Length: 254
Image 1 (cartoon, rainbow, N blue to C red):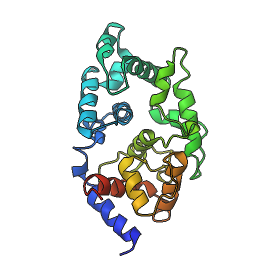
Image 2: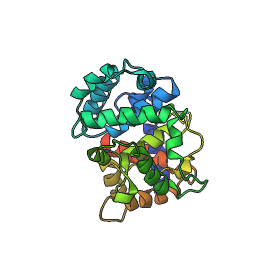
Image 3: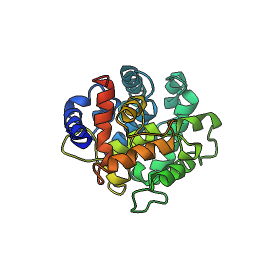
Image 4: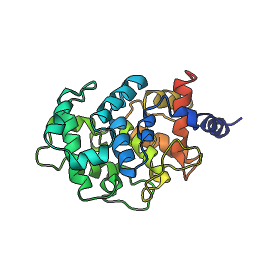
């Protein structure tokens, strides 16, 4: 069996409905309204740090504070409604960061129907555009007047050479569409072939073992290198192999 065949089998094995419950993607799956899915997905991806169970619990706690209607809460909350968020914390993500995210979402959704617009600044229909889109998104996200310096570390950018794992994971959720029901596929402008594979610890480790990554460090170029190799297996949907690499790393301790 060659590597493509092996990975294709693993994609089929792990890209299944059963994958959802134990993964942070279960958080946006609690919602059906497009904007709620976007907001829940973005927060869950940014908080995806540490054990999956803790990430899920922290996300649940956060959305309970929004009465489990994030889009409505963000557009219509009062100052008083924001007080509970002063106690929210997950790892180094704290109340200052949470309140800025809420302010950004309010500002954005007052002008736009979808969060996808924030990722379309400079979009072109070509496969290697994502580095530019994520750089532009970072600048867009922090253009509010009172953007705290400390919050910048929670939104990765290729400009800082980051592999941008969490944002790439969020984009996979929003953009990829298949008949398995794990990823949402609710965004239609960004194409699956423009996505970059989220390079988390498991994906990185398995990718190196399989010879898909040769760079010593893990940075933006590493994520691009891995994705380029995966495009050789499926040029239209390279990031579907995230399921295989992640599943091999977590479930099978490959």
